[in-house]
Picture 1 (tube, helix red, strand yellow):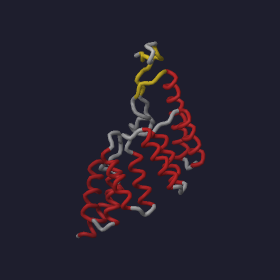
Picture 2: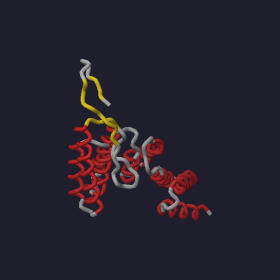
Picture 3: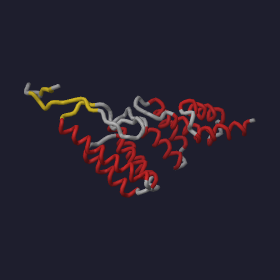
Picture 4: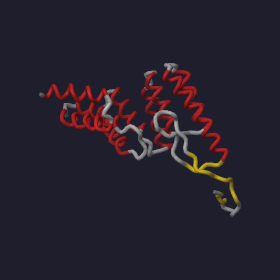
Length: 196
């Protein structure tokens, strides 16, 4: 497919590009039409992203943060911003983590992970009221692989606020969405036994 410039001249050829992160079925950025140069930059960003994720899983957080930044320099994606934020959260840098998630939302407002992560970081900071809207937005995000997380996190908020039946409902929804999610199963059973 060729684009035209404002002057009617042929611009660079573009093609639809869709890449996977290698983390479950999570895509690396949305499907988008890119020039060959943009596609190569996005592919390079994905290499840095995968290396960053591997470093993060090994607990090499400084290395992971640097590699996520290199991914963002090559081609900005909501995934790299979100995972850089996640790395910052492991380093105890919650404000920086939230800032990266906000950047992720600016890149791709349909990507659900940063909404949930902001909610989770606000819970960690003790701001359960602030977390509610972010978790609700995560539940409605168009592009999200793990809808059970915001339900579980909202259950945590409701339980902390004493809204126990609302918490049970959210834990149950998380379990329905992911029957193997042990944190939700434990929270549900623990709260259910309190209420009996």
